[in-house]
Image 1 (cartoon, rainbow, N blue to C red):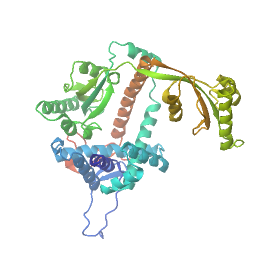
Image 2 (cartoon, helix red, strand yellow; image 1 turned 180 degrees about the horizontal axis):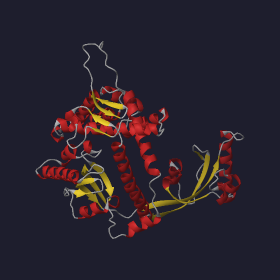
Image 3 (cartoon, rainbow, N blue to C red; image 1 turned 30 degrees about the horizontal axis):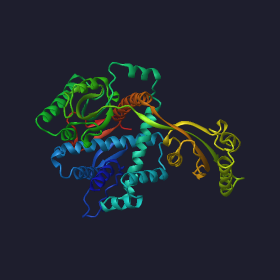
Length: 447
């Protein structure tokens, strides 16, 4: 739970929006003066926000402080993430992206469920940690906002064709299996000259030398990487090999778990990869069911009690009077997708029609008719007609290939979007020690 709350605090400190307040001469003497450390278009980052975010990172790494870089580097990393978040929130607001209280309520419930808590227990844990639950809700709202901004940016720019899927699956470079990766990214600024590219490469080689000298890879990522996941140790999680760019996949092919790659040149900079683990794909065998149903829905003319009674009458006609299920389905079922087919639902995986029907399927034997049961749709009568084992390996491979191509394109599109967003913004870091050595004090033009 402490790790959970530490993650909450880190997210809160990094993602919460900030509004500068004017400091007046009449401010109480006991209240320390805040200062603006960075101007981001019309917004600012205050020293207090940076301090809170840095403390949260330190709390997250409690017990592993040796993995953190020197304080000035850590502050630069955190400030970079704060600035990037400000820019995305501003852009989303410009595009009219909105998030409702209901959306945030749903997100709160999801976080609570993932951590096996009720929303009330989650609130208590957040407040027990010293954080504001209102700020936590605001942070969730910003996460949703950025997700929707991401969707709006990539959805009109990314498409995947069947021929692209065929080409990927038939390509000699296509590699099955999954890899767990971590990475360090040293970006090359847009429009960089030869000197800037050489400086980025030198920084990548410096990071590689530190790792070879014994520095933990996660610590090196925190210290050297400028990717958004740097403060997470550069962990990319599990990825299918077909999601990895071909040039990097070729390098990974010759690596074993624990190996670290040389500095690899990519479209946006230099990358150092660590292969944490790998696993092979297996055949995807699933159980499919064949069934048919009759659905009776309550309506303005049919009360819930009448719907239940009609379902029970139809069940008796099928089981006791041996009337034809298909005929009764055509005459009585209110399910538009199956009624004209005599209630035939075709072959489907167990959960395809929802958990209520899935539970009934498990309880039935082939050709057995269920007692009438209720779902959110109404009252059902279900007959299980058969089961089979299906090999969905090829279908899943195509689905995964489509997703991999889409993810790869989306990552590139959004990465380009973020680079343009930052290069066209007015960013002025006012504290000299917080400026990255190879960056300008201010970029972009005043809005």
